[in-house]
Length: 516
Image (tube, rainbow, N blue to C red; front, side, top):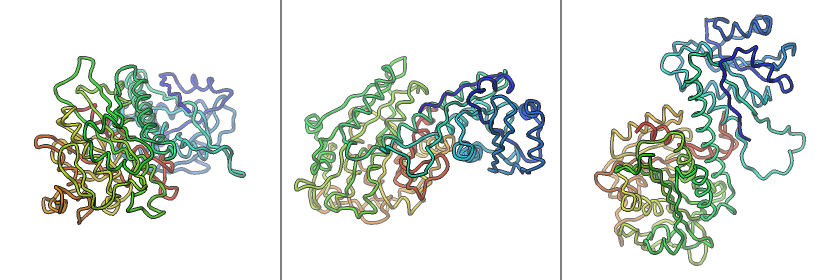
């Protein structure tokens, strides 16, 4: 469902009559030590005839950081159903990241406890150090959109006595007149980023039997068409891939019944193509069995998520009409599944990549780096990109290194990497930079070819070094290993992240491209 987001400079009393038939829930932020001071809280007190203070006095509420409370009203105020209090702690200590976490809890309460469909969120009197009303409105709209997400499942009924999921229908932000324009800008951007992240989640959650390389290419083409020409899409089919000598992509695809596709998405600013091109490369393995070195049951269970990088790239490109980068942006995806058949690549095979470098296949489950090698070369040779970010669910070792809630990144340009890290902080998507120690580079040296795809050592670093071999001198490059952060199981899902695809890195890419 699409969440309708509105911003109004009207008072609470003037907005509530719009919800006389379908009552709304009011979400209020409170700071420690400030009581019920401030225009928006005083307006609530006046509109409810002191209900808020009476309930707090009777039931108690200490607005410590991330404290939430759902208050049932007496339904005497037309249009008002419940009030959700959100404690933010001390005003002077609140950060944008802290606000995100508190809002995640608040919207989960609104969805699961209050089970509301209409939200009213006052932004009046927001006076916070470190971020603006525009940023506040953006985070509110973004997190409401993400909390409302329901995976694109194939259920046909509710399970036994399980209640149907609640969906938000509308979010109304109340702003002062002086900040109305800023609040509208923030809400529009936040809603768009939330929607793009949901698109990435849907792409990841699509089951492997329908998520073929051809299907993924169609989704990219559909996204581009919906931008009304701002983004264009070109899809190369197998014959063209063969002609381009993409040996890595073709080797991984060898065991599949589905042909590969190579997807190129393009954006140019309104003034025309720029000399500088920024490139996005997304790993697009639509399902990964591990090939002949087959994964075990547990490891293979959720391998429809192995194109999380491709999903992030497609969704980020959908935001081009909103963020309007100053530079030309190109995005590429080498799409295939990694299947098993009598034609599948096997250990010991030697393949020739598009760059001309030869690769000995040491392990068929190290397939992603083979497809990315061709995609990275294409991005530099055919698109002319001098700054490149690749995103890939590449290694299990990244989870051991940084856990499942932080993305591990590698880079060859300190300034570019700092920009990416700063964008991730603004987006609320934690990253941690890992070293590319030269001592590990030789681990990818092949015995019968230039390289092997199963070099020994710390797997996340070895894989990053393998990709680095395909990045030319003078090209700034960042590799984001999202294997731990791209997907949640029911046991690891929390807050605004439902079980399934997370859409990680979409918002980081958007913030980075908007600021370059």
